[in-house]
Length: 334
Image (cartoon, rainbow, N blue to C red):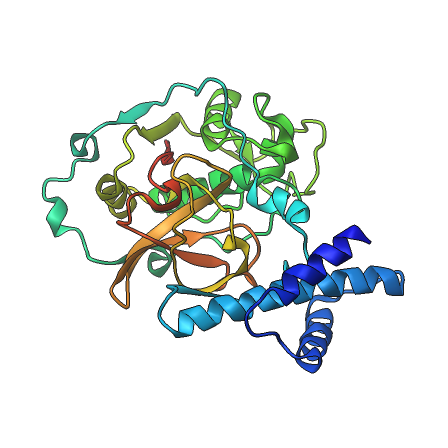
């Protein structure tokens, strides 16, 4: 009962309340679109209250967007009836290791990137247009973003190097990386190091994703992809990150995905309260560009193609390392 009262107060604290008919219409549409079914009336009423609160937040935010006070829109999606606690596996799947495994290459300056004229880099870049980015996947309610960031980068780098498409096993990483917590979090550098030391990572078809923790079932006799290690950007420098993206390939990064990140729909995501030192979620940068005068990073997420812009989000670039996006960047090395 207390939770319902809190939700009720939060809804009615908004400036311009949505009408009951609008809420009901949106709720019915949401249930149909996302296949929501409930065990009883009480459960549905609770979910509807959560949905109504978020719907009001969406309307308030987008009104500010229409007035030019926000740089991005948010909208109804698969998470609109989720509580903050239920969103945690999606937005808080990173577990920073006590000790970072040694990278094969420490990138401390542009010298390591062999970029002779950084100013000659294209003003915009998108690895998708070159056919090396694999389809957006869905991690489900397992906090395995770190595994998807690892495979997302590795699949693209494999395509760049060998001109062949592979779909790799996130479940192997969830089950087998010992210095990670599986669905309770992990880190990409640990995953890259595991793949190098283990002798490879299986294909998804041989070790399919289950979205839950399980025993390690790696099979060395099955097809696998091997690497020597990973390269790591040791300085939080967006210009160097841009060079990495343009000259090396898609990059695994860690970000703060708090606030209304989960509701992103379009525009360039810039949230002044986003932390540059608190890392909660792992994604893959596949490009960069400029939209309506705002520089952005083109970021591949792991919440399915129905989220954001076909599974992607444009995050503010050259805004003082927004959300810490340049602080923990790495990519696999063959």
